Image 1 (cartoon, helix red, strand yellow):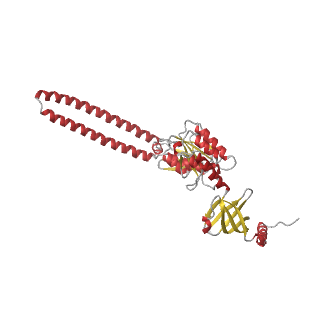
Image 2 (spheres, rainbow, N blue to C red):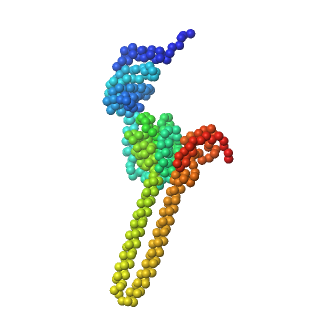
Image 3 (cartoon, rainbow, N blue to C red):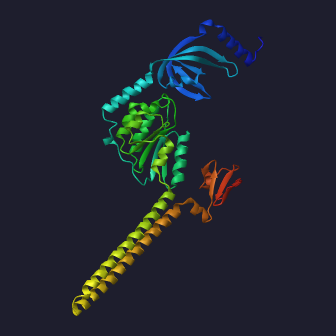
Length: 393
């Protein structure tokens, strides 16, 4: 039986084979760029064609402007087998542009086609409603995107509901799942607005959102749609068709919610404006009464007495009406303030209630509680960890 060799010895042997092969030194390779990243002045990217991909490393950071996602380029260099990691990379020392890659050409072709059909026209775009109560989100339930949207939305306004339609965000058949989700959620009456979201990625990663089936589903959707795909510098076809583009999923959550603190400040501003308007109204009416009184004082005694009595009655009636109006508005403002305080989480905690969380989720039913797992009890002035050991109904 042959004696086994170590991984290090095998990897070193493979590296020596690559290093010794003169035909592999300083060769040129052509392919389409994807997955570009820059770390510590080292450019990492891959080249691909219809049948294969090649991992590349470039130690010349000034080449970053020539290595563009989706472009077709020729790179010159040598393959290098990394012994410690057991990975083959192509070390690039020269970059030449050939032209835009196939994916990017398809992107431009579809964009032009849909633009010619007026799918991007602002006349077809729906306005985003105010005072949104329920947001539909089309994304993967496994990613960080939905957590970011929930965290920002509920931090700003806990009363807003979020309905998730779980779909693929890339890969085989992702575009059909996304288009179907748009069709289904578009017919859901209780949704005020839809957000189609995913995190950043390469042109290939975002390709599902550059397809005609997703574009037409977005255009035909009866609900307003916000596109929140990728990072701020990423643009996809759905961005042009949707009713509004958000630079990131987090920005979409910001756009669709208002802060309760801002709403309170707005209400108090309206209250101050109302008091000033009421004061001006009273001054105008009193001035009018004084002017009428002066004018009538020059008339005959009989007319003066009759007019003064009439003015007195009108003045009393007016004051009663104003008092009733002011009391009604104070009552309405009190109801609004009470409503806001009821939905304020801090107000609920101040009443002696506590919020219980386990595994990062709120626990509001005994059946959802897992025994022998830490839970966190949140009070108004802090929190405490505890371990449940028994359930009792």
